[in-house]
Amino acid sequence: MEPEVLSPFSGGFEIFGVLLVVLAIVILWSTVKIVPQGKNYTVENFGRYTRTLAPGLHILIPVMERVGHRMNMKEQVLDIPSQDVITRDNAMVRVNGVTFFQILNAARAAYEVDALEPSIINLTMTNIRTVMGSMDLDELLSNRDQINAKLLQVVDQATEAWGIKVTRIEIKDIDPPRDLVDSMARQMKAEREKRAQILESEGLRQAAILRAEGEKLAVVLEAEGRREAAFRDAEARERAAEAEAKATQLVSDAIAKGNVQAINYFVANNYVKALESLAKAPNQKVILMPLEASAVIGSLAGLAQITGEAFGGGPSGQPAPAPRGSVPRA
Picture 1 (tube, rainbow, N blue to C red):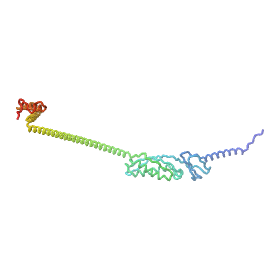
Picture 2 (picture 1 turned 30 degrees about the vertical axis):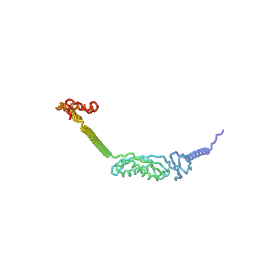
Picture 3 (picture 1 turned 90 degrees about the horizontal axis):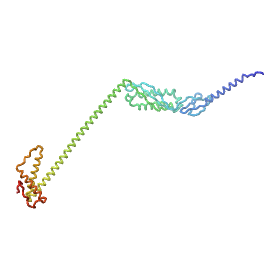
Picture 4 (picture 1 turned 60 degrees about the vertical axis):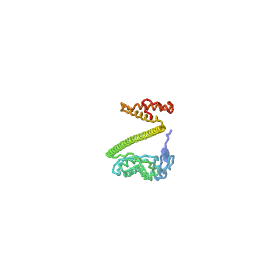
């Protein structure tokens, strides 16, 4: 049996076929592109930009086209490193912040600026020095929202040509020097002590005013009470005088009609009132009766007679017999 002779060309064809298959796979792989969501790819034809690929499946022309830049279309954040800023009143502070931006046009962001993120950082730092350097330290520390708004307006306008939108710029830290911080702390302490003293003085003043108003109101009410009491006393005296005058008139009319007992009643009544006042005196321990006390008792008897006549107890038109010691009839 003769041995089989292998041709040198048969092995070369097999290797060439394998290479063709591998090359076809590589070319096919390079022409099929899948763009994920949130990304945009730029396509270059022999180095020249031709179009932008949105998320999805795309086929490129083999050999002629290739992907130029893969751009992230989601909102991104950049840290702005710390830097020294000199304010308008020559105070040095150390400032840092963050910048949020989003690519709106992938082609312009890829080809209009070289190194997009470092460019945004440098532009933001420059404008921070410009904006914050035009303000005093007190404005710097109290108007952070105003600083952020002004920075956003300036930086967004400057980066519009790059196809991006700067959505927000936030100043994170503003650190004055240590000696300046100590001075600010002393100033704040003095200001708070001043406010505390003012509030305390205001409280004392309000308390004094309220106390004086209370005393004034008490005096007014007391005076009104005295006036009301005096008015009522005067009214009572007036009523008493009217009653006395009426009683006197009645007695006078009775005397004019010839009723002598009315005189007895009038005199005895006043006599008894005088004795009553004398007896009610607080320092009166001993009551000295007048010599004509018997006459007073007689007057009381006359009163009883008059009362009896008034209620039908005695004879009509006939005077009652005068008791012993009574005032003699005229």
